[in-house]
Image 1 (cartoon, rainbow, N blue to C red):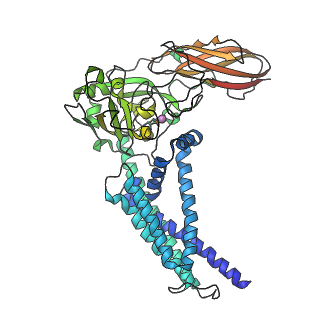
Image 2 (cartoon, helix red, strand yellow):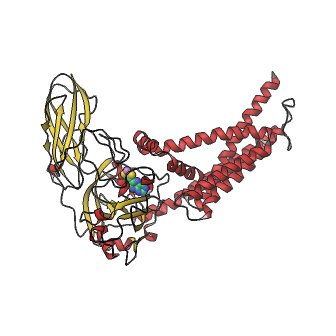
Image 3 (cartoon, helix red, strand yellow):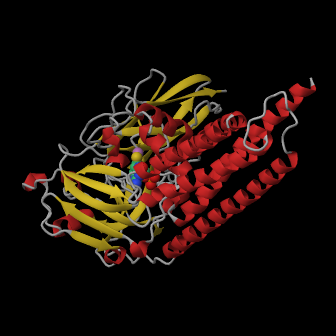
Length: 524
Ligand SMILES: Nc1nc2c(c(=O)[nH]1)N[C@H]1C(S)=C(S)[C@@H](COP(=O)(O)O)O[C@H]1N2
Ligand SMILES: [Mo]
């Protein structure tokens, strides 16, 4: 009985020793990553690698279900897995001290490989955080769990008290304190550095654009409770990307290269060049291809930037329709993302831009500081590269961008969509006049008609708010004489090409969801 209890206690202590070793490994890795770069930390690197190898359907599901929290969920998952392995390694070390220690090193190799394999990794130093962290973790496991077994040798269950309690306590406490210190120091250094970049963003003053956006008519925005504002505030603007650590790019060190097929005059631009360029200001509605029918991954912002077509012409680029050899513009970001945009679309006269401002301030870090692309009419994943650093003129035949490699469509113009914002699903309005209202979008084509149907009744024309531009969403409303009972409200839009939004349901993958948005309400 007492032997069993002692064995159990030692097992528990060994498991705890494993977790402590993992904690030491991560803390040291964090400290080293603060010197190397935050993206090289093992949790971030392994997380990034998992995102890349996750099947597109699962990724899309995660984006839709966890939204902006998808990354926290992933990191929590990785840490949970790691804790389980740590307990197992602790127990293993109780029996085979050296094997346990080697096990920790194996995890270090995994982390280092993930860090070196990241698309934004440019140097072997990215392997350092995982490697040094694993060495520290391995030493902690060897010493701490080792003190449970006596000098060098595993203890058989028949000698339960052959271990050194005092040695264990001292080793464990020392490891815990040192690791906590290393981790805190690492965090502190990382925060200081990101604070510096934040200061560089704060010091940016956006010049007045030479070509300002037209004023938004008060009749473009309906004052109906439950309706979103016409312009989406930055803090409410949806965020979709694969970045576990938001890239913190220093604007003063930023460069954009424009090069590739048919570029007769390669460019290397600085942030100052853009500030001094011909700035345009435009309201543009951005939509994510992962937006489900009725979803929230759509927003409108007032962007300030430089026309991309101007820069391309300066670089000597001709669109394919004028004989240019490149049909795909490949944008690369600081975090190694690649997005492919049709050169024809960028140069056809629409307001495709390299944006530096969003709703009156420099781009927020989450939304691409210092510079991102915005192209009206195209889903974000084929156009809206955040933290952009490189533009290469290429062909669709010879290069597949990040999402295209993962089975999303090469070309993806935004599909005509409409959404009911009020009443909300399962609302219980009183009988009488109920305002049905929402938004519709068909960027760069424009919305010409929105119709609403109650149950299987006739389609009724909604009142359209004033159109701001064809590149922005359009609000609509319809007063409804609600009668008691449960009703299904359905909306559909028609764009300026005359095409009515299809009833045909399509999933988000490969080129955007389709179908009509419905809301069920009970009038009581
Ligand atoms: N560097 C980078 N840019 C990116 C992405 C990304 O993952 N990395 N995601 C794209 C996608 S899928 C969309 S919908 C838009 C979203 O922009 P937002 O987060 O500012 O709303 O950014 C695009 N640009
Ligand atoms: Mo997206």
